[in-house]
Image (cartoon, rainbow, N blue to C red; front, side, top):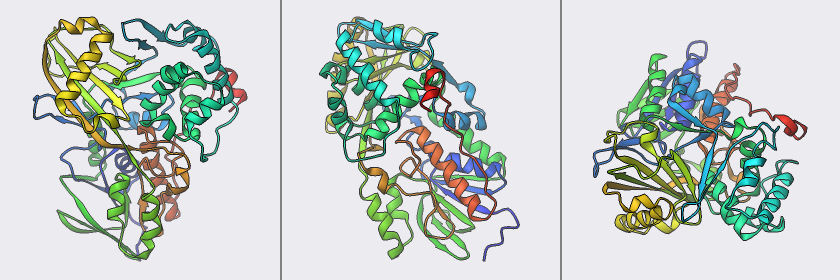
Length: 465
């Protein structure tokens, strides 16, 4: 049997946010951590690399956080990169043709803090806004259970106009949850708006990394190393065997024995790595209920600036967000040029399109929002399709999401797809890592708390919790 009187050894399989969060928490608590990552860099689906076609370092997709992401914010503070996040409290919505509206907080108490700006927007009619306000009021009462109905049905039951659905609800949720409204659980749709729109002005602030993602998360790898752990890159795990004497990990460095292991990989990979035997079948069957949804990032380098905005929401077209990356950090571009990343979430319509078709579509739509793009010269471009970017937060999926502790002694699960109470987000991934670390410490009779509480409601929202 394992003697836990001394420092226990823990294998973390997967160097995404879930694995990094678990590894940092446990390394800080005195465990001997070894993290295995099959790629040559950490970050998982939130990573960056040198794109072979452009020679530029690109993020696989633009990732943002909100003020309500308490565990992700804590994780950044823990690894010393909170100063690498640039925060914004204003969102710009642009219609085809260039008309813009802004959404920003006021001095009114929550949940009324955005009301003056919201009612001043030009992209929605007064009827649209009143209907949205009624639906938001309904969301204030409670967070519903994860049932069978989808959010589009919920919106129609609550009298939402087609324009409100397209220009408000869809804009927010497709970006936040990476899925179409008719495939989103009511629980998690409501959670997005309660946590980020209603609870407080701070909750809705948007943070954007000022450095490439892998550079950001390499600080987590360095944190683990500085606490006596190892981070093994290009280290593919091919087998896990859990028994009374610990967990044996088979990987391309060879076989190693650990006291514990945390499997922190995407749900598709987790099913193939679970220990063999009938005990795995129920979990594998549950993982078979998950589906993936894609995200496409379109990177464009121009010879001049086509807008002064650092970011904007783009309405009524395929492209949903524009981020002017050179406004956040230098990426090796000429100061007179401009580097944009355009994001299409739930990009099922683009998966089969060619690189050139996607670039042509992006340029045509971009010119509708920013006419000066017609005069700019495109210097280079890249299209990155993350076909398995996130799992789909479909109605009723919660009953298939596993807890961190498994039936195998010493083996725990982490990943945004586990039972975190949050959807497929970076916040959900970090929460899963902290929950797995907590479950591990409880299993040896030395429970520790790593999870950070949700952001507290402010103003009138205190009445609703």
